[in-house]
Image (cartoon, rainbow, N blue to C red):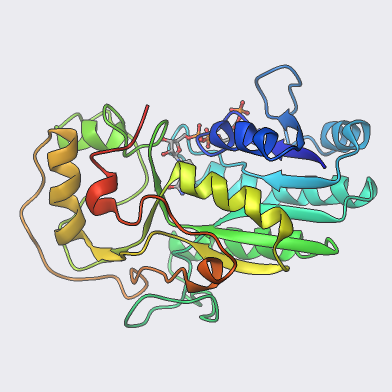
Length: 278
Ligand SMILES: NC(=O)c1ccc[n+]([C@@H]2O[C@H](COP(=O)([O-])OP(=O)(O)OC[C@H]3O[C@@H](n4cnc5c(N)ncnc54)[C@H](OP(=O)(O)O)[C@@H]3O)[C@@H](O)[C@H]2O)c1
């Protein structure tokens, strides 16, 4: 099928396009840079682009995280997704696959599956992040067929967690290093996923039943467990172990995606951090 990849130049998008082509799809990329420059915040420009591409499916891998500006990313989730969905509906697109996150769940003990509701918190900035995720997920559900991939924290080439990336710089003490996330060696639990596994899930999701799927590795882990392994892989020091956990920092379970045949090639950050690939 003809697949429009929105965010084709991003960390996941770059892994995704060759995989889609290898699976026999025709790929058309959309982003602000590249051969077909479109700003998804410009509703009319998106409408024109999607209508002229006339895709069978849209894969939404748009984020605005390059500047580590959470508010810009929230705006892209709300307004960019709105424009993309409106354009897809106007062009008669049946299916959309969209990138979401696996850490918007309500607080609780143990990793969350997809049945856990979103965090009802009213505390800033988390309330705004959850509202953006909610808006993205409900907008894409307006298409006849929609799959939401709730990714874990991405690592691998082009991400903040790669060798030489922003997390390594922050741990090495660079005050200019900018990323969103925590480097506390505490009890807060995170789930990770390598960008190649994230991309592979998006290829497969073109065939999945509508719904939300956690796309995370097999080992949700507290900061005091994963941070020393990351530090060793990146060759940088890490903070001393501390305590405490945000109630929502609980990790996520991948059984639903696994049941449809997806499995992470990198089953755990434990070996994955040291083998992120080029
Ligand atoms: N879940 C996560 O942990 C997560 C997810 C994604 C990214 N990140 C982090 O963010 C950093 C940057 O990664 P990245 O380059 O993949 O992400 P990015 O800068 O957030 O961009 C992602 C994609 O969206 C496109 N895009 C952004 N705003 C757009 C707009 N207004 N209109 C059209 N397209 C738009 C970008 O292309 P153009 O810039 O060409 O428009 C790119 O293709 C990395 O260090 C990565 O670790 C983290």
